[in-house]
Amino acid sequence: MIKKQKVIAKRYAEAFCNSVEEKDFAEAFKDFQAFSALYFGYEGLSEVLLHPTIHVDRKTAMLQRIFGKTANAMVTNFICLLIKRNRLNLFERISYEVEQIYREKHGITGIIIKSAVPLLPQEKLRLRAVLALKFGRIEIREVVAPEILGGLIIQFTDQVVDESIRNRLKQLHELMVKVDKEWLATLITQPTIAL
Image (cartoon, rainbow, N blue to C red):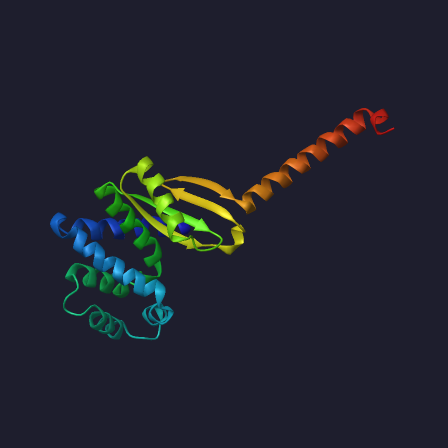
């Protein structure tokens, strides 16, 4: 089911990107990102737009008021289409796919940086400079994830660099378990070692 949803989301994202003319793509992408920020940032909006008892016409009318007349018509029409076809539940994946297509067209590498606490401004600048040297044009999204305990996790394209304390503790635990197993195996085969 999840694989099918990914395929559907990718098709919608490609259809949206193909329908927007190349010269208007950057502007449409800004409006698309603005809606994404609103959709993911304001919990009440997603609840209303996904609520099964609210009529589709009311949802689209509300959406048109949110966008106003200044928004790109392709973006407004696309979101309304998702509502009408009951596909807004896939918006997170569709949004991800649209971002991927945009970055690919503009040669931008998307990077997600996870840290246990927000990075300091000078840390952000230094990290941005290092990553820009390696990848050229980059777009960084910072995520605060206290569960990693410390350090950083950097995700780019299909690679992950995990320098978190949580990962190092996991590696240390695995090493200790391996050493214990080897010691026990040696002890079983050579019981005189324990004496």
